[in-house]
Image (cartoon, rainbow, N blue to C red; front, side, top):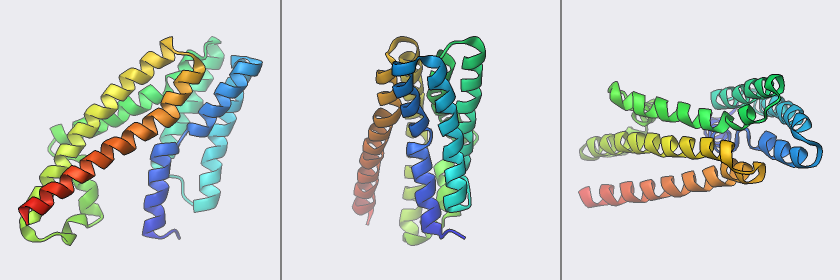
Length: 199
């Protein structure tokens, strides 16, 4: 059984890097051998990513199932239509789904990050006066993170239609990861600053 820390690390890795290797394989192979082989090998590597996680961690994160499942499905549609665009739309659909989950959870009164923090007993580490502040902060981050994924989903869709495969792959891999880490770093810094000012 993986430890709680290992499980969190696996979930974070899946969120940031899930589906990255199939995209790289698709881009490299497509440039040299055409979209057909790029799609086939990209889909194979998507399946292998799921298998790797299952063997190494004895558990496949939901985000990995969704990301690679969608990638394989969209790759299949691309093969049937002979158009690699469908494969390239996978990141945009994935990010749009994340945006819908985050924004929707706030609208129904159950902010996703607040619920996750309660599940991990994060609020128990803070003094009672800070708990309400942290709850509001997590609610705000959930809303803003939903907006972040909405913008990125639109950009990813635009890249799929109008950018080269290489530029699209950079956006999907490095672009999303760096922008997301940078954004979360700013959020964490601001949240700590607010917490210190309330002490």
